[in-house]
Image 1 (cartoon, helix red, strand yellow):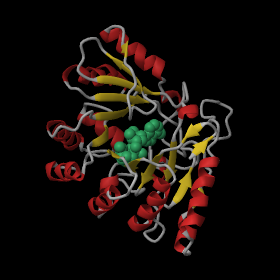
Image 2 (cartoon, rainbow, N blue to C red):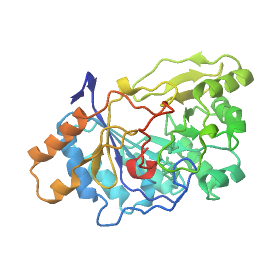
Image 3 (cartoon, rainbow, N blue to C red):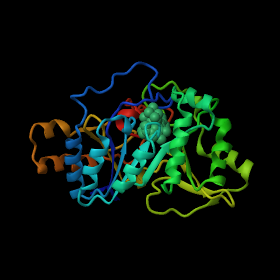
Image 4 (tube, rainbow, N blue to C red):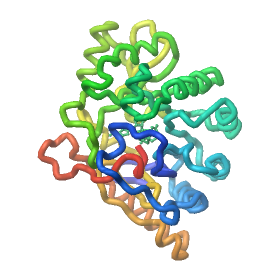
Length: 327
Ligand code: SAM
Ligand code: SF4
């Protein structure tokens, strides 16, 4: 499938909008309703949509949420996903708190070895401030289990917020001196009604400057398959990589190869634009494969040329929050 001149081969699937954490940059300030059980896309429905999307050129899938491991039955779902013809790569983004050695070994047995963890701090108290859960040790232990079981490259997503965890930029970057991890600093995206203020956003230039002040000039690394939009660097002599994901300061819309399936069964052409195509209702009303494929094709065609999030006068601030779309 092609959008403009971009081949679309990557589907990100949010299997739940529920999460055991309440991260400041992800969960709205005002109370919000989770999707009802009858509205959430069932596993067999997700499998059918993914199968059709793979027949149309999707080769990579990332499972996300909400917290994917908070949904019951995920391991049987992942096993069915692994059986889809044409699907070459399955990865998962997780907060890590609900995983243990046994579950990690199960993932590896299924052939799923690409895991991204989210961790914004190395300080338990700050972890609690950001996620509103006292689970730093659990998450760190999971990351260590994954490392010892050979998950590599082990990627860690970090969102930096001024006044909350910006004093930890150097410590997080220093993890790459000790471990072969990819620490990826993601610029905070203002979505929905979040408790984070605009002036708490820190852009990549500033984060990079702070790392270079502490560790010297960062060395640019070549991109390889599965790097996605991250621009990669290394501290001289480090084992790991530092990545920067810059949706605000330097958007990568022209290279975006993604389509998203939300937890309520809509196809979303762009993370940062609220247009969505309902595919679950026609599927539940016995649509044929050809009819569903038309909806997938239409969603690809509707990918916007770029988002407007960096424009202060923008009227395009997405109203949805990340847990239902899948970050
Ligand atoms: N619960 C899982 C986790 O935290 O890894 C998967 C879902 S979470 C929505 C996926 C990613 O989105 C996380 O790495 C998180 O840091 C990132 N994220 C959430 N809200 C964000 C925001 N407003 N700006 C930038 N990244 C955000
Ligand atoms: Fe949950 Fe992930 Fe959002 Fe944090 S970022 S609230 S862990 S979905």
